[in-house]
Length: 449
Image 1 (cartoon, rainbow, N blue to C red):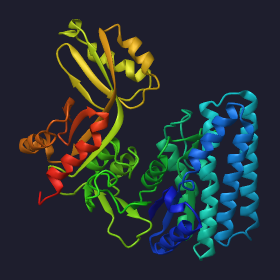
Image 2 (image 1 turned 90 degrees about the horizontal axis):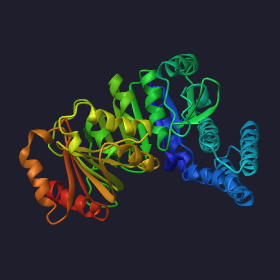
Image 3 (image 1 turned 90 degrees about the vertical axis):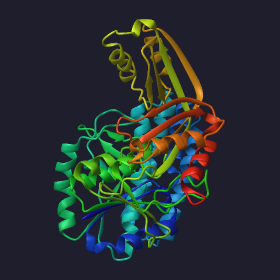
Image 4 (image 1 turned 180 degrees about the vertical axis):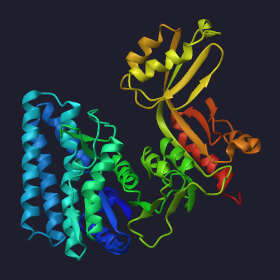
């Protein structure tokens, strides 16, 4: 059994959905389970509906809703499944439900995390039945399964945590019998539900995570991520056109790249697969015969596998002589970030200071206020992270020296080598992120390097 996850661009319109159906049809012998994202761009529009309705702009919200309704029914017609009375009726009912949600938000004047999840989840609730119908039309024995009946989560709306044991039970009860019967279950990614049945989401990009969770629960042979790029690349091709395909990469390297800005995979995707040792493949749905990228434990150890970068990073610095030889201070500092649900990416310390980077500054004001009890706190916005990733990086001082030398006159604010030696992280000015990536890629992948 394999899990095939198709991203928004792979189900962006009728033509893309038809390609997806062909890919699944060619894999029937491997007992596929299909996980699909919302149609490309739909989730953003749904969240816009929630925001506009909560601001009292109900007419604007309903106008967006009608645009989405038209788009989804156009896809149904173009795929030749408009005669599926149940699909047409259910799709119409979902849009009616969405309209009622928008009206309720307009009356309340506030969009809570729970209500935003209910709205955002509509994308996958709409797309999965359409994909299932398209598969059935070409002879694939597809069966739509509501992912909320399978993907159990906590009630942390907006970024719910999966309940792995409950997911495993649900997969055995609801997906495994279908697979054994020769059916192809089709589920929406990204969405789940609490024990009380309340709709949740895993956070943006969570469809990959859903696929990995289902694959781990069912001990899949492989997890395939179908997207609009040829696989994982040595760098973002929008920044460096000379980016190269990585045909084989280690789990830990892929996870690092995802965390530090590589857009192909959601950062959490790898974790469930790693725990079960399930290989993950990344393919281009527009080029189904391409080599793609294979992610496993046993890829060769290279000093540099790829480069990732992201701008709009915030550096938080805490400095106090009282930190010198004061047991427990570091733990107390990081507890502040934990209490405020703010993740830290990069850490650098000295005897009397600690510097960290954060991407999500939603709770930064509270973080700074609580950190002030330890000493002087400085916040530096407009920074960026560039990460050089390779399993053999920590074993090669020459490689690290070459990386630093290649940056030339670009200003460095922090440098950190991960504890595992797999990632050399460089904090630069946000406006220098792309230039740093270009220089590093030229040093390690171009000109015969």
